[in-house]
Image (tube, rainbow, N blue to C red; front, side, top):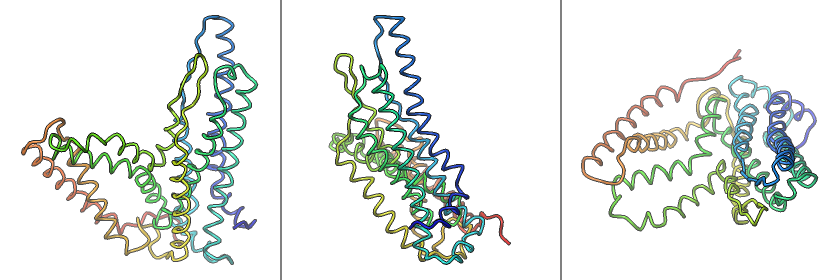
Length: 343
């Protein structure tokens, strides 16, 4: 898994994203908390009746996930788009070793950046006035959840790269697939609302629980379960999700890593630059994309709070038009090569 030559090669191709992977949590976590501690100490000294307000800000995790998507896309997708994969496959290493070396360099930096940033936050809180207001015990859980979630996003992004033929398709499909569970939930809700908004009350009775489930299996939204918090007098504590939620990123890591290794071993270079590497996946991909876009087009202007015959009719008209447009666009782009540097 670790070979010095492969480590240097992967680092050379992705060093700017690796540095960004470190800088984003270092800025948004310890540096921001240090500024917060300084500001809080000043306000308490100036205003004796100052009331501390706790606002969990996890927006930075989205930036971190986009960096991880970019890192995985550079390590695999850029190889295909620039035709350097032929050079990689010519190296005296097995393809499994090549894939695991890409996974290992990403996981190593994810672990280092997340661990050091979280440790510095705890140090800032414990050595500043923030220790009077915030509880650091939950940071252990947040650290564990964020570490596993980031590794899961990166592993899943590498897996998606094994079926994509270019960096453009890998980035696009990574974003789509990572948000797909919650997107499918919203599409299903719109479909049911149009057809049975009055008649199927039992579905809406459990819709919140169903939404929580789809939120949980949508990796970019998993960490936002921490945004809830509890307060006792002046002390605040970050809300802790159920420990069972840890199963989700762990399953993402295991399944994505196993399938990614298997697909990378059987990767071919003749479809480099195209959207998909494996021709057998194209019919399933086109059917899935057309169905999703049809449902999106049908529900985009759907009316709320009632379902009558005219609304259902307009839903299907929009769905058919959107699906038809999507079909012709896919036919055009599926065999188009997005490639440069080919000699």
